[in-house]
Length: 304
Image: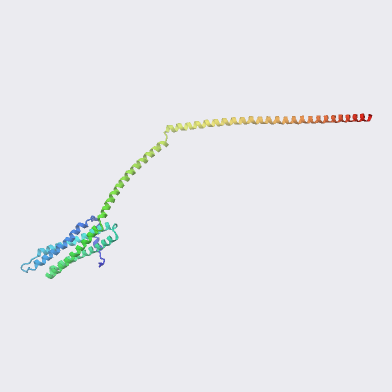
């Protein structure tokens, strides 16, 4: 059977400084929350027995009843503290619990809420028992026994959360280990960062020293470059002048050669013309000679 959901009014919770409650304060408080109801049951039982023989002339059990009242009042405060500390510890371990463990933790918190209200109810019944007499004391004893039984059941459920599901035990162990590991890693990273910054500074200083020569060396290097540049310019101008002179001489040679070729061509043409005329003349003489010889041969033939 599941209990209906109830909660502590927010107005009341606002007065409880949850952020100031230390972690794992729940275990020591629940020890008192378990033992006080049992002590109250025993005291109320003794109170009934002692007051059974009391008379108006000889009242008995006032000390026992007063002690029981004070313990019930302290129990109300203890249950309020156990609820608040349990809420803090429950939030700390909730994220690492399994579904079954979360369900068990939710049921444990709900029953704890009921017990906070029940402790107030027990205090109210104690006040009524002071007025109603024996019947009120017997009713209070019955209610106290039932209350103590539910508290023992709640204690068993809380023990299962710790020993079966590892609530808070594993969470705080892991948290401590993670914090230690993170702090260790952070220290290593800080050392690495410092080494990197130092190395970077040294590298920048070395690069600056290599790329930035001394002022004297800069002036010397600039003068050397300027001197070399001027020398190369002068040599280029001289080479250009020599090239122009050589080109001029070559042009003159070419012109002279052209004129000589023209004259030679003219001479060849004249010689050729003279030889042609001479050949024509020789040919005419040869023809005349041949004609004379032919006539002589004809005359000789006729004579014979």
